[in-house]
Image (tube, rainbow, N blue to C red):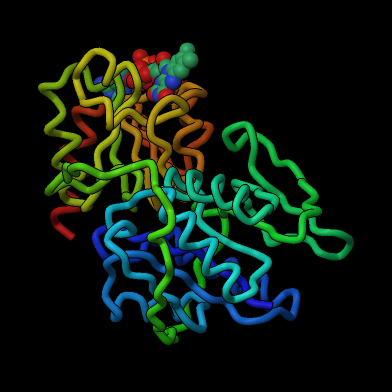
Length: 321
Ligand code: FAD
């Protein structure tokens, strides 16, 4: 039985989190001695890019082109994936946990009469029943959920499973679907694109500043380091509340949740609400002048020091590499 994996793209590039979802599906298929892993990609995306799904485990990728899919209408995405799921006779759908993934998965759960488990962190245990381990309470605990439905949807947490690649390529098949009978209630009228910026939710490296940066006039230190690292910039909530930085940079429980390979926190105390947005990061580096700052407990590496001394040195050291 095939496992279907929903692929997300950004500006025509497949997202890393979707490749992780493919690796997860491939490993699960091998574990249960199951069938092939099939990817479904929607909208404008080049064949060269689509073949890359093979390296993470897809044997083929089904490509549905339709302008409503390119413009990101969520109802259209859910309808297209549901049609593909039924067409190939899949029983399991795997996707990355993300804001788009959440919106699509919830609709698919209804359309496919499928159980849905989100924030999955491990391959399901099928030794007796179908038990799935998921992260809960913003990463503070785990829960085991038993799925009893025939159709299943698994939304995999970013950075929770290793991305395995083998250089293989997937065959690309273009699929025509009938989306015309569906009256999608959303119509995209216009879109604004942030240009020249690395988008925070997708960034592989994030440099974030807190109140310890003292004021917006000092943010050039954060930006200089971010530029050298090819990183996105973030901030703590009070920083965006005071207006030092725009709200879309606010990281945490009530802001953006990031899952980069490297999160650099500068002058941020490490309140639980901030940590809730960064605990999927692979490596956390904290710079704080207070050795008792709670963030050090969550850090992989820490520098006790004044940000105004450490940041310029770090930036010039990286520049020199
Ligand atoms: P502070 O707590 O003031 O910490 C500043 C840090 O900078 C200190 O650790 C200090 O030692 C250090 N420092 C000072 N000077 C220097 C220097 N020169 N060099 C190096 N270090 C220095 N917060 C979020 O960030 N995200 C959220 O999503 C969020 N959601 C919230 C939701 C609720 C319901 C509530 C009640 C709060 C929320 N908060 C959130 C706020 C959170 O509780 C903290 O108040 C906030 O994260 C603190 O921000 P901060 O670390 O920048 O500032």
